[in-house]
Image (cartoon, rainbow, N blue to C red):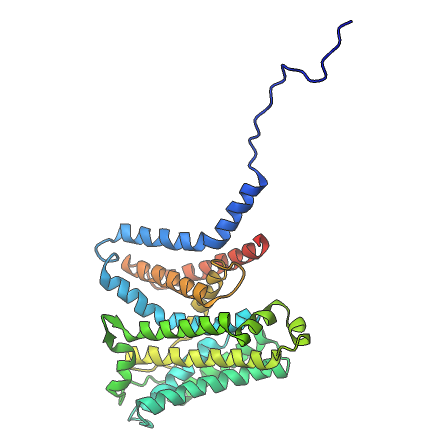
Length: 339
């Protein structure tokens, strides 16, 4: 009787067509870390291809950087509280109030304090109001989501009351308009101011002890407190920084416009959060960083400027910004799962 071999030599090994788990993981991590950057590059290429004569110009590049500056600055403020796993939904109303306050301080038709004192006082107002909000959240244990919505309404109402719901465009000194309007070495002053704020924010959050503590609070506030981290003080400080940068944003917006409107800056809330969440889905996925926020703000500005060049502005921009924020939140969630 013939003896069958233990292994048939005629058997043919079937090719393995399924991708290796390692390949899927690498692809997922690449998408989580660089997907937004790739999307930004592709978006730029699309606009440049559709309107090369108007979009792909040095003037347009400078305009994008200039117009991105106020959004970048207010988004950097939000990054501080997001790093601690908190929210500040009052920032739109705070920008509007500080913008109006700054012009009231400098306008000769109102207080006429001069540019430097007026700007410094406006920055102090923003810092103080933001710190009050932060103190209520940190020391009175009030929920940030509800409280900041309420405070944003209060700030908006104060701005309207301060000017009687009217715009201010008289008596504004030329030195105030020069803050955002002047150009140095071919670039708007706003670009230099935004870069300076970005540098300080990056150094503070990434290379100082309080900044690292803020990330620790965002990871686990109770564990940070038990480790000796001054959680309540740092939370109040974070909201104070939001107020300070909201005031600076208001100054830039009114300086560029040469006027103040009680609604100035109210529309920045959604784009600022979109920029921060977009930034959290790149470079260091799942973590809110100043550099990531800057890239997110630049991405949004490229989209806004591109749509304007294509004559597709107005409500469509808001629809796209809302959709981008939803996608950014999804990407941030996927980034955390992929780590």
